[in-house]
Image (cartoon, rainbow over all chains, first blue to last red; front, side, top):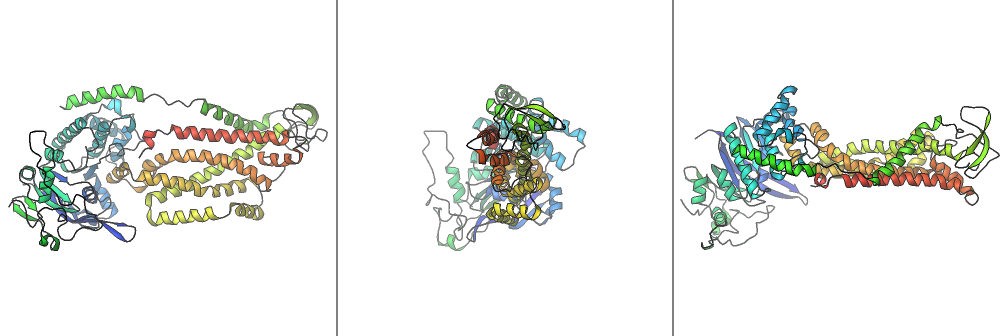
Length: 320
Length: 308
């Protein structure tokens, strides 16, 4: 297997909220993203996916832990060093319209990364921007002079992708890039991402709450619950034989487009996500887990490898 | 696959954009008030070139004369008396109302435009910085603005008039200073909502400096609401000048201002109402015009662009 491009160790993100309370958004997660792969990150909303992604980008930097990228720990870098490294990690966001400054023209938006980093002489910026727009499926002549509100959500997301990729980053973090789009447009954007990945040799972290989408694009998938990683496995394995009860519950919730199939949803014991301000002791999933026992409240289950490349953090996994 | 995607997108664009690209119309609700303000500005700027008496020249024989009265008076720049028709009459000591109105417009416009400009530049900058950096900077700016807001404005104006003397520049600076907190609040509130949006995060991710983000990403989005607020401020300050005249805190006589004209006409309100009513009407129209333009600008801010 390839060497990791990005290694995350014990990443922790906490937010202070009024009344001296702390939100434990991400509590010590570790994973690697290998050169050239797409790692999917799934979990229900509020589980810390986006906080983790922003912490990787150091926007803002994590409360604790290490983020190793090409031999440097990003979490320990000062402003200047970090700024020089930033072009190598780019991100696209969920809301395609809020991602683009409504006061700027597309030409300015896509050229901004080049200008900010002074990567190209002025004369070469224009042709480069046009080529990039064409690569993401927009007609430069039609798009360059327009402002974001004149485009549809899918087109805005294409512009966002152009802006992120014009820097030729090593790692592209996609934070729910298609969740705000129509299903038909989702497919177009996913195809575009796949095409760009092949063309530019990108490594991607793909965050979504949509299991079908993640399965479609990812080589490996990590499942997050309430700030912790539950399971990390190759996409195939995870979807075929989930080991963590939470993953199994998620899988069973994927609707099957076949009315003759019986509904086979795993029953959870409590339906609400506990508050990240006051997470359960031990295993965080125990309050909703059908297999929970006394041990789950006492001990935090450490991630362990139950098969090659298949990690699970559970005292009583379903397989292995 | 890629080719068909390009075709689809291009086709979709061609249809949708033709409609969306229509120019937004300003309409008479904008052009009428803008025309009036243009007229006032033109009058104030060219006041010295018209064949009419200087605003301080007195015709003792025609005091509080009705509009249209003909009298004899030295025109500006001349020493001989010549026959002159007072189109808007004369005030209670016999000075030409039209001349005083035009020269007075200079004072009202200078106060109404320069003071908000000071407030906008200083308050806008403070508000944007406070809203962007949050934390301690924000706390300090908000606290300072609250102190200024809590400070009695009249006491400050009295102090300035007393220690520095009553003059137009002093008045403009004082009113500008007093309009800083409100502008800062508007700028801060808008910055708070703009800075949360993802394009700011994207700019940080590409390695942009704070200065770049403030100037290129935030300010363009805060400018329009701030400009709308400034229109309101212009109207408020023109009225404020009028009010201050009654307390003797406006420009010192004999310099005419709309406020002092209204104030001086007060004594003769029963015999010669035009001395008060004409400057009052002009001030009212001007203030109304600025308000209407502000309203129009606000409705022009594209809801798509201003939404969060």
